Length: 562
Image (tube, rainbow, N blue to C red; front, side):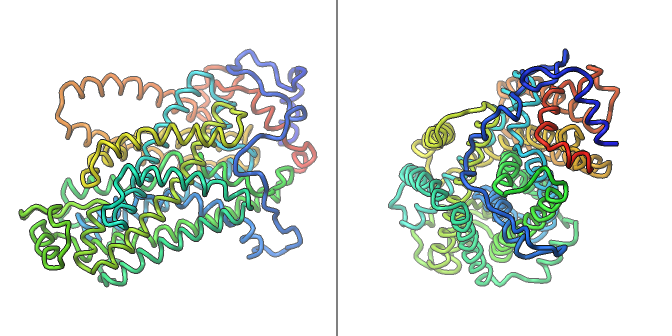
């Protein structure tokens, strides 16, 4: 039946010379026929990892090992300096009470990453490429700009995290701007490790994750957190005696964990495996192993995040500036001026967090903390660079040399970071981090809505399109996440207390809501609300010829077997 329906699509109108279906409702130019297209010019995929074909078991560790890699690179976004700062603030402000929010956010992140991986496996294209082929020109450009903003915001946190780590390791001898330049340089070097083999590059990322686990695990052992309170905070979804500060922190956790550019990244990384997309069984198997690998990777990232929350919950929850100042004085720390002589609750960030650990547990704790932050910042900066390349390459269909693309995407993200590093002091970056978190929260709909839209379309995903349960649950999850982040943005803007800013934000909000509404309209049609499909013949008002292109890219015989 499926094959007959697909066949009807091809027989309805005679195809043009380029293999595209003529469609009066098409809003973008049809792509060339897959037969005439060259092999896609891509980054990171100069080689593909072969999957063992001589294994017949239902589950094979050999196959799982072959698929292992993309999920761990994806999981690094859950361990970037922005997440680490959110973790330590959660522990210092709310103790163990918000661990369940971290757990739920990670599970939601896993479900969203599953959609991203399936899109890449089934279509052979990542999310930015699908957006480029499906959305009209103006929405496509706006979408690209919004995602670029998210990448820049994330990259600023990651690079500055590295710079702070270098500053701590050098006892202040390396200023923030110099740390940024060092990070930019070594990122260029590390990014070309894949010239020596894709698996070696993935092993390097695995090494950095191991460094983080050992560093923050060491702090966890030193702090000796109360295991009963930890388990209670993780599995009891309740926050006793919590006020607005704890609520804001809970919202901040969700915003830090679920990052928009990571959806684009994961849909691209899965293309590095050699999967026969003409064979339904192989595609189904790839989806299964990628999901298992992602689950393992995010479980490890969750444990590392728990280490950080638990350390600050056990040692610094409800501590005052006066208490910390006195203890730092006793240990001879040169950073006592960071903590004013008052009884206000301790406010920490990545920099102050390292200093406080040094005061409480000795200099070794400070340096090991800095090593962990350096590994987090360096690894996330590299994956952020890949995200930038994939997004720009996909949305703009760039055919530049690899070095030119790396240079351009790095320059776009690094320039504002360097300016901040030159004009901002390392001890006063919390305000900037709050702004960057808000910036990324605002961009979430521009990743979550498209991924649900395209994975729900049978014309794109064939038999692997989202079923009703996934459509409903995916829609509810995305609505919940976007609502939580909208609250976070509103709280931040109202705290600035500026009438002029309120006016500017109001004007921007109108345009923002209109564009999000446009994406939601397309998504609802994809989810089956056919009364909103005003175009009649067209899917979502998107290009029908693109669906034909994707179907042409599948061998007709396996389609017939389905």
